[in-house]
Image (cartoon, rainbow, N blue to C red; front, side, top):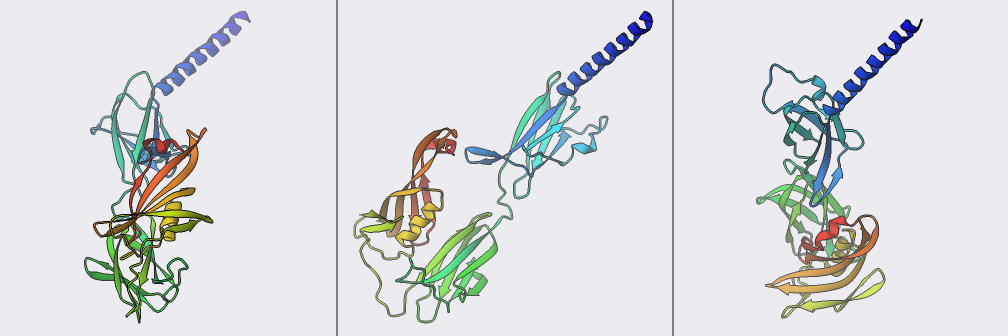
Amino acid sequence: MKQKAALIILHLFAILIFSSNSLAQANENTLYVNVIEQVGNAARVLTNAKVSLTYAQQNEEQPLPPEWKDVPVDENGQVVFLNVQPGVYTITAKSPGYATAQKEFTKEESKPAYLSIALVKSTLNAKGSVRIAILKEHAPQTKEYILDGKIEIMKNGKVIRSSGTESGEVLFTDLPAGIYTASASAPGYKPKQTEFEIKANSEEWLPIILQETGARPSYTTCPKECTCDERTIPTQCYGRGVSEKGVSISTSDAIKKVKDNAVNEISNVEFKQEDGKPSYEITGIKQGRLFFLIPVHIYVKTEIDAKTGKVENIEKPWWSFLVF
């Protein structure tokens, strides 16, 4: 009886040793891959990516497991490959709307491997949209639409889209990213052309202000103040002979564009005209927490083209990507 019990204990001990060795071997040959999206200096986890693992050089003697191809990441943006033997491999990651990325690495012996691979949004065949409205010259802030007008979208001098303005705002979708020209016209108004840019996977807002035929040009001086969030903000004017000539974007619309970029409060508005080009320089305050912990205020200075409404430049502290 004692001899039989001893044999059973010895057998169980052998199984335990074998299982421990197998587990250790599995851990040593495990590869962990995390897929992230790179946005400037920041990064976030991608949860709709797929990852493939291949040999860096063709190896016919050791075919790769079929399950190593196009493996979906989990909710944490991670893929786990098991039984990856030492050698040189290539990791390929892809996701809809992003450029495919590859990374070569060497799997060493006796330890697991941890890799991160970053994807960036693809501009190839990327498309966006633009929402355009024709407004009366003296009512840009109240959005008094011209409803009997016509809008044409041109690329390289050719009309590629057109629409009437019966509904007020017209949305043009599925436009490849790039520079376009919008032509606006209406009975009793002077036609006008404006250049704008379509950005990948985004919608632009383009108000076009038309002047009545025979109306006197509005060469009024720069406004001394504007209203935002029920506060009166002084408008400082710079440049010799500053005027509103050629201005299509109102101060309120420029402020709205800045606040749409997650700015919580407007602290200062400047209207400038340099070399005949009018622009707004708006300073806003963005609230957040540094490293999710410390409350901070970031001053963000945005320059907006007063003719097109295009954001020309954004200045903010280099460490602002650490604020959430």
